[in-house]
Amino acid sequence: MMSTYRIHGATGEWEVVIGLEVHAQVTSNAKLFSGAATAFGAEPNAQVSLVDAAMPGMLPVLNRECIRQAVRTGMAIEAQINRWSRFDRKNYFYADLPQGYQISQLYHPLVGEGSLAIEADEKAGIAEDKLIGIERIHVEQDAGKLMHDQHPTMSYVDLNRSGVALMEIVSRPDMASPAEAGAYLRKLRAILRYVGSCDGNMEEGSMRADVNVSVRKAGEPLGTRTETKNVNSVRFVMQAIEHEARRQVEVLEDGGRIVQETRLFDPGSGTTRSMRSKEDAHDYRYFPDPDLLPLELDQAFLDECRASLPELPDAKRRRYESELGLSSYNAAVLTAEVETARWFEALLLASATAQGKPPAELAKQAANWLISELFGALNKAGHALEDSPVTPERGAELLALVGKGTISGSIAKQVLETMLETGDAPAAIVEREGLVQESDTGAIEAAVDEVLAANPEKLAEYRGGKDKLFGFFVGQVMRAMSGKANPQVINEVLKRRLG
Ligand code: ADP
Ligand code: MG
Figure 1 (cartoon, rainbow, N blue to C red):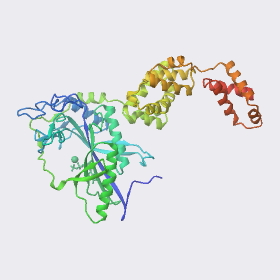
Figure 2: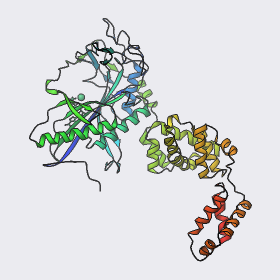
Figure 3: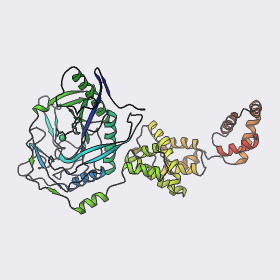
């Protein structure tokens, strides 16, 4: 039995309560209210329109595609889509915010109540499947970026990100351990990538999390939380929770109290430190943005959003199990990332064509090869699946050679390594290196006879009842034939000769 996550303090056990606010950059060519481009890595201030720079008299024009992506995301977490929503101004002064306010949605968000399922994971310490509530998704503008270390006496501002569309995805305080928070983030990122509404790239900042943590004794009401801002990797989020929960337990057990405050995570030390307390937080003076009409969605728009949704990871995983007969482990591995699922489906389709068999018949072979052979070889060569030198079509050609008995499974491993190095077609490699499997009974019989003649003692032992030696003979024959003999034929011939 697995135990629930607890912090063991001096006064007993503490539960941890976690809620995440994830900022996900919407995948779109243009910003939320302007036509400026959003590509990552551009020269500073190369993607700034007059609207983003807040020039007087400029008016925001809502980008339909950003709304579409947020609605599709809401549908993917089975959330309520609000057909009427509204943009509000959140007023504050900061040098990276030329407007003096951020356009956001406080009172009437685009997406309401939804949820996300995380799976039991014994290794990670998640005892059972769990549904994490999602309170809302609202759409808002990103701010610019200050650059402090470029000049001894000056700071710069890069407004490329100013006005880029973000989805803020707010969870309920439903997570109870760092592992659950990690699983939630990975699942959310997978869904965003399947949907195509955010690239989920945490290193580039297109997905970042504000981590709300509190602790309590079992059965007590929710404790006061702290919020650690802008944490930009799954591992860091888990570390921040671990550290923050322990810190809170120490403070409380020392007779102190937790103040609701904003904290910063330091990746170097894995710790959090106070940034500002919520008690002296700004009053943002939210009010409806007078430059924008309320947003009303019609049925045709919603229908198109729904129709454009792809098969999502959970549904795909279930289908791989039921339709393709894959193990739940393999189905989970293949659907965890959309790129993996796409690769697998392309491999399966090409295999079915190459071998003239229905996909369901080839799925196990293809899944096992992808997971144990290709992943292993790519890892060794330092490649990700996305930049694999072996395409799904080439993989299917290799599997077809095994399926037809042209090469053995062990030779296939060797051929795969050469394919990764040279990019050549498997048939060409097999031909060039003379790797065709020998299935000719005559040649194999000759090798068997040689091996038996060369090992009279072993033969006597075998005849005396040492059955295990059968494997030894198979190995010797295989060696005599440089690994190229058809193992099934070796087995048959040996049985005949020994039996
Ligand atoms: P605010 O309006 O102050 O931002 P919210 O109610 O919107 O507060 O909550 C923000 C986030 O904090 C949500 O993700 C929520 O799940 C989480 N949260 C709220 N209360 C707690 C708590 N006691 N412990 C941990 N997380 C919490
Ligand atoms: Mg909030």
